[in-house]
Amino acid sequence: MQISYGVPEETGVSIVRKVFSQYQTGHSIFADKNILLPEYVPDDILHREAEMEQLTHMLAPVLKGYSPNNIFIYGPVGTGKTITTKFVLKELFDIVKKNKKIGLIYINCKMKRVSDTEYRLLAQMLREFGVKVPDTGLSTNVLHRRLEMTAEDKKTIVVLDEVDTLIQKIGDGFLYSMLRAAGNMSLIGITNNLTWQNGLDMRVVSSLAQEEIVFKKYNANQLYDILKTRAEKAFDIKVSDSVISKCAALAAQEHGDARRALTLLKTAGELADRDGAPNIDESYVDAAEGKMNSDRVIESLKGQPRQAQAVFASILELSQKARTGAWKDDRVLSGDVYAKYRDFCRIAKMRELTQRRVCDLVKEIESLGMIETNVVSHGRHGRKTEIRISVDNSLLNKAKLILAEAGFV
Ligand SMILES: Nc1ncnc2c1ncn2[C@@H]1O[C@H](COP(=O)(O)OP(=O)(O)O)[C@@H](O)[C@H]1O
Ligand SMILES: [Mg+2]
Image 1 (cartoon, protein in one colour):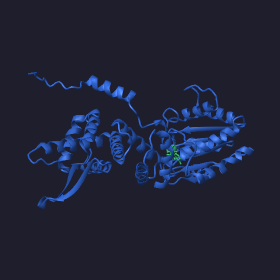
Image 2 (cartoon, helix red, strand yellow; image 1 turned 90 degrees about the vertical axis):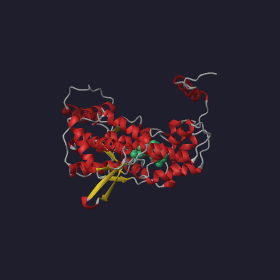
Image 3 (cartoon, helix red, strand yellow; image 1 turned 90 degrees about the horizontal axis):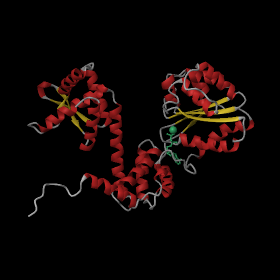
Image 4 (cartoon, rainbow, N blue to C red; image 1 turned 180 degrees about the vertical axis):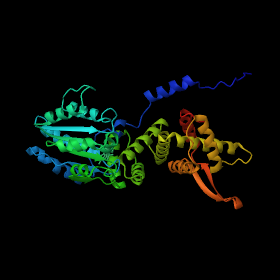
């Protein structure tokens, strides 16, 4: 008789090799996955005819040597602002290529190292004009003057995409001086932030928004069309209408975000591929949605301040104790959480917040979807808040990693 020592048939190495080789030789339902990436520029843009026409009319005067008005474009994330603007600009570029009297500059202010200081932004703009600028060393005044000189004999259209992040980083003084100096420059500011005007210098607001274009959410039918056109190119198989409709419907519920719709379809395809499935069925869309939601929860936990992470770590530790305790219950009381939180603060040498503030943080964690709270009456002991973890184990394990990295648990 052979004795088994519990060695599994598949070792780690053999699994790795198998997966790689299956990937190399196996069939994929994708023809070209990149077509579903947000960076991909499609041949045409659907359902944005009115916005494209508006923008084209506003920019057209440049072809006769006039400076277009400054334009402000806003609307929720994923509504096609960036792609529409780039598209119109590209058509314009194709016409004016050889015309030395027209300059076009596109800057995404969210990019690190491009717009986190006034110096970097000015340097980037000059570089777009083909002027060499050292990384440091000159004064911003010198750069401003160089920019004016370079742009002097041209009409220049400058797109500042996600301009609210620029204002966050360097304030609105830059825009103010630029708008004043900009005889020959027209600005197009784009933002997802619908309250971008709040707190800004009114002179900046009125001169930046001489013209406005508002991008509305896509509805499910529009998202369906966008997805369908892309899916035809991205996949090697015919993706069923029900799958595309489902992605469109889910993204329509979430502020009509085309990027989310595309990512949902791409993720569903990847999950199907991983199973070696011949096609995507609706269950893969559900799975993709679950995965994207949990990715989002994890991202927001990562982005939380240490104080909130400490509160969550306290809840986690207490609820695990409670679950394995005599009552096999995973509810914990907010008063106990506060005591545990103070222990954490002492260990981590962190400032202790008041119980009220910690209650606020508990509410914030609840809004991320990681816990549920419930106020219950405890007879003559008054009312107490019960807290319970509401995410599944795989998500919880990822959360623990983040808390461990932050020095808790
Ligand atoms: N009307 C459209 N037709 C085709 N693709 C679109 C359309 N609108 C958005 N997309 C795609 O959706 C994604 C998000 O669009 P984007 O322009 O970046 O949105 P915003 O700038 O408003 O956040 C991009 O990948 C883009 O290719
Ligand atoms: Mg954008």
